[in-house]
Length: 174
Length: 188
Image (cartoon, rainbow over all chains, first blue to last red; front, side, top):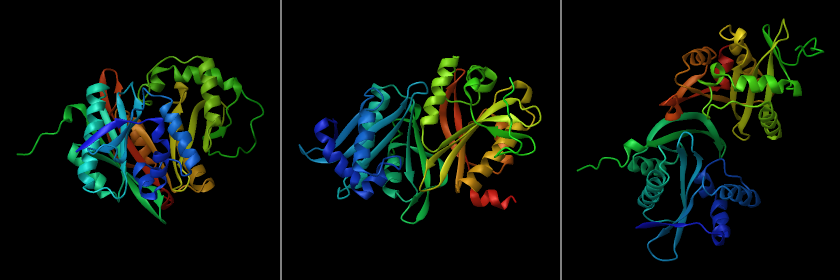
């Protein structure tokens, strides 16, 4: 079981440490700066606009166990859209299930509290866990930015995903 | 208003247009363009709202403080009329990716190929001067004339950001288009 808890300033060091993990930074997105000092600045800029960027910690049901960070950011109130992103510590067990659980919480918050209409996410073409998790929550792939990222000596495509309010919650299979 | 002196051989030019730096005297012109429904309605995802000269100036200062972006005025070559704005913003230094945007603000010059000429010149600047490997843009799905122009320049449709824009009481798709350097070079 996954629950989300509000991010607090006490979580900052832990967050930066998580983002310093190469895999987690990659998962979080290529717009995240590389250096810890720049990551702190980026985080503080996001937090300076609390209405536009609810930040949650993803925690397991066991008290005090932090599994990762989920965020809703880049909220565009005019078009009623926002970006969803999640990263979990690399050793997380039942990874896809927990990604799905985290995403479901953020999506519910976005639609039912903030009354957004469109949620979007981006992934690299080599993140199958995220693709499975996004599809499980109902996201549809809608665009592929060819050769948009460069990592480990090669180019990767970036995939765009979205979930619209009328599409959620997805119909349950029998 | 004519700006003097126009360079004899502008740094970036073709037979139709050349690029010039934005001057303080452009602020009123830009404010007018950004307040013109014909210019903005099918081009921008933001709220359509009249822009003052002061706001246009602030926007320019803000933009010019951004690293890795080039915003210029498009000038018609014969008359030296300042007819539009073109912009290139680096999105990823390591991947060599940038986003291009263009508007032809002067009504007399719309639909006459100046947008295509300016965009084509910006692609040359991006690939030949900045060593980019990918240039991309977004366009509202309702802007069929622009899509034709972009396709004609070699941009490929990479998908649709579904219902991403709210305009005139409806939700409109935001098309994603991209052009790789190898594709641009293959055009000869």
